[in-house]
Length: 392
Image (cartoon, rainbow, N blue to C red; front, side, top):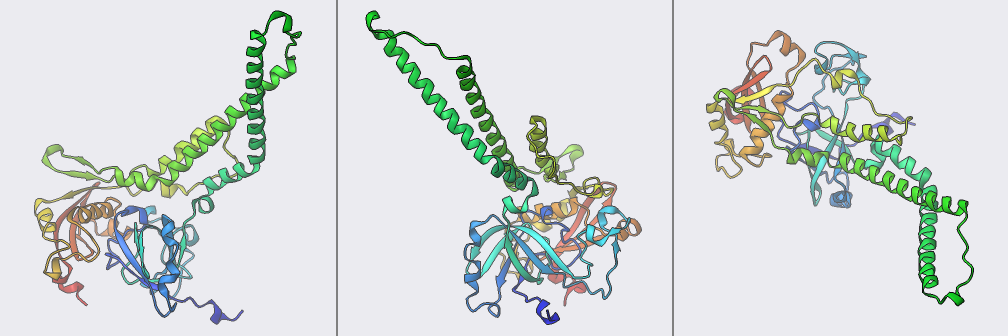
């Protein structure tokens, strides 16, 4: 096949509040409420809105994009992910943007589809990023744990149907015998035929059928519990409020995305305890993901920074103070907390520039903060348009 046939076509561009690399979330789960938009280009389809028909029936979408800010000519076989705090690992065991083919992948929540534009939340993509494909997220295909249960369900479906049918037949037979017994008891003595007792095997058959029905019901109930747990984690995150510790008169904000992964482990452990979990399909991650040496941070706003944030809104006539992607003060504040809670600094800045101020942007906000041990404090917020070195 000719090399030209491998060339990718950009289908649209991401519109997001992340204008610069600094402060952009490294993973989509970090800022679940931040939204962005992708509009399908008319150069791709004559009717771009037709390409999005049916996508609204799904809850999440895979977004494939180009790391267009990656200017490295050569790629390295080993890289230093920020969560490893300076240690190296193979590039294909990471999600580093510095790859032989600079293609990125994000799983985002679909907030709505209108015309040729899809609105998504939980993004980690820079504004203006070229998008090369969209694919719906399908839990029964994309989640290996759910897939294992699906396989088990398919393999044993016939057996379960037979068990249920046999049990239903058994229940019907027992019911008929009960009715016959009532009729027998109401008969005159001279009209009663000789009674016959159920054999030992027949009694065991009724007991076994009932046990099969109970076992099948329990397995289905456990599976449904597990699927609901997996598919509603994002909803649980939205409903779970941020924890605020007001000790010593200071508001210390702790992120509410803690131990999300543990929610997925609970049903797995429950299934293992019941002895019905498949042993040949398991999900696992590298230790540096689950036990990173980089700790999460508590986030604090100075009183002046919080007052400065309140100057911004969606309705402001001054474009410098008008949100383009964010919707409200509370959303802006929570997004800042989410970003800083996971320590967005590079390993170099964390080790060599720990005393320096850190700057990043979010929508039209330019945010200044400083880091201490296990703490980050926002000291100033001003419009991006009023910062000379960021103007272009």
